[in-house]
Image 1 (cartoon, rainbow, N blue to C red):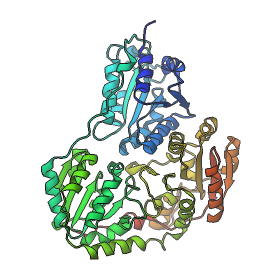
Image 2: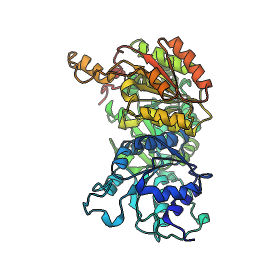
Image 3: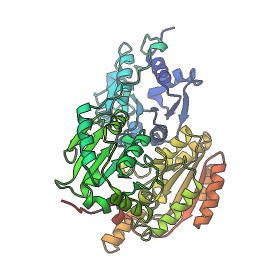
Image 4: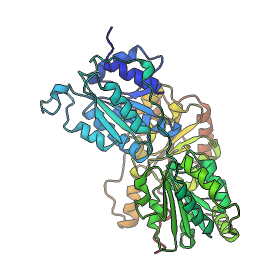
Length: 539
């Protein structure tokens, strides 16, 4: 019996460690799913109610595990429905593999009105991924799969995609499943000369700070070792949370780092663009050591004094081994960092949001995963929710993708059934993917969805209140009863009107092996933005 491109693709995913395929089938991909039918023992289809749900689930699973994940959807409108998730995966450097259907190959570009036809699908896919290609026949399909997979995982990881025309799935493709595994790419070592130059700057510094981003998530021990050796505060913005445990006295948030910025003489950027810090201002007295696997990041906003193009898993141990054992006294600087760590100045201003966040933190174990959203509680969580381990705080990064939280949380909860996963949502964003409660019920995914209900796009309304003299427009909402809505899906729904009630319901939800929705009615909150968008104080 001849082998096909569809069979090749199934076996390729299995050979490269994919055991769950987040998906929504459709006619252009029918041969692929028919091939998958015979291999469900090794590759399970997790089907959703909307293409965005499938793509977000793959993203959430990738962020929670740090491992590649895959999704499959149909072309045209199906593909477009998944594009926001791909854009977010790109922003977050997530290894997500997109398998996109396509109309028959002889109809592409002919504007014939074929079902699901759109112009420029491949070009759009290329704009949202690190690498994208179209499978054109069975002879080259294995090579194209391998090339896309290798690109996804090399140096700076980002999503990759392949589109497969409907008629190509059944093309003959000869392959040996044992030859399909793509070896992980070698991690990029650091140049010894650059390491020595960076070490000299560190040894001379009196008031250093370390900024960590998502690129440092696998290097927590080495980051802590460096910070303690040189008495440097460690700050994370969004994706770097948990690299340095929040209870470490050298761990500080954005407002504390901003307070120290005018006096800092060296900033060490590890796997981060340093975008927020760049907005605070620079002058010639502030030196920059920046380490990133992407060379473009080393000069993105301001040229680094010493830029090291390397994987942090190589560079950080080398740097720690090279800095002088005897460092200059930084006792006064360390004392200032510890003082700010223990008494953040935003606690009083943002007390209403922090009260709810404290209820969540008290119940969640250290390895529990919180998925943020574009909502008032989640904005404050960036500076007021203590994160103790990497990959336990999932954020959209710079993309700011409203509505991602429920579906991305489902992916995280499906991939990490060993830990509690909680998704925080506003009632505006929650409805973007609310149909995926049916997916949660169908696949028995133990996600807890918290919906902060204020019957408004709360952030939009807050800006209208604070910046536009309360001229409210298009920010009010008529939201459903989320308890009854959850129950209509066969999902447990409860309501918490106080932080104590949230603690109790959250404990019960974590103990329950299935999805739970907790509605939290709230009013207006004080604006968090003066503590997040901090002004220039230098240069």
